[in-house]
Length: 493
Image (cartoon, rainbow, N blue to C red; front, side, top):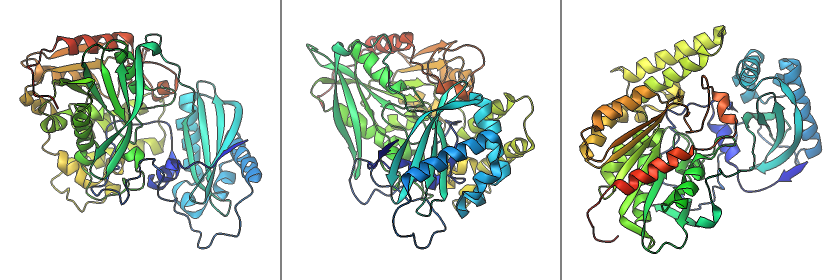
């Protein structure tokens, strides 16, 4: 058993922000909605601070729980899942968990979500422990028929389960064949936006004889790291190192909600600007100051929600040479959230009554987002994904396709044909708006998914648990398009 007492406590913050205190690997990339408008009270950039998990404990007992005992309990509780003994799991919970996950809901999580996506449980390969803010987590490396998952049990000072997570297993990154490590260098950098300090990586072509074009990568929804890690996949690392092979410098950075889980969780007036736009603009302006970069040839790429935000980012970056929209939503986010859920539920031949009721509830939430009765005081619990009203109200008059066309800068729109989260319908809307903008081009890749990895057949959420890489043709197309854009000389930096 490996125990880590490191400072990274994002799992605590994630548990606190989840209504049911459970994070199933199924993920919707329509909206993030986890950022506040006020800056952090400190400028620490290591992500060490995070909110604690709510429990009913009023005074913890003397001493920490026995770690060996906790690991034994974690394995026993996983065995209870396998045996269908949900009552035993329920009895191990603290009161908050009991309120959120009764036995019947535990059954749905295990049978309808986990097993339905990754197949039967086959065993485990070990476990590790982590500590944060008085909580102990036991993470079991569980092997299922189709994928490996980390089953994370979070215990409070009384030994009660205060958090439960099913997450893609941590695996070592293997670079794609097109990455040649000797052709580039990587260095740690910092993107600063006022009090927000975001660690990042700058990947530079090696031994360039003149300033090179640059590209900023803007994440999708949720608290993404600089690699946009999802399970074993790191699409932003693929992009950065693949493009650096062929002469493009790339800046990628940890998202604000990843670095500051405590300060960016809550209902306080969040909009798309605080979540994504402002930091992306700061990253762009920072990249233009790097001596190895040609400031007149700096582009911005947005993936998923990041692409949806590109028109707003463009308003703050008129110096940008162009933009790349990578699986970018063009339709209202609330519509995509509902569409994604409908697609996922359609994969099940017989949706449960609870799933059917849940889908109906989301339809009601989407209706409220579009309703004139939505106000800043509307509770987030009544809105899609628990995202506060401020976020939805801010987007009410947002038309991304027409906005980006009005900017006038060239745009490359790329889309995977197997993407069920952002679909060809969005691609065609971008195409219709941008076809008149000089330099704009459009690429549809029939066999690629939302992460621009190869696949076959109907896409499923479980596919993201399989290791894949951004297709080589995407890397080549991006680089060639950037090289085709002729920009007028500008004053440096």
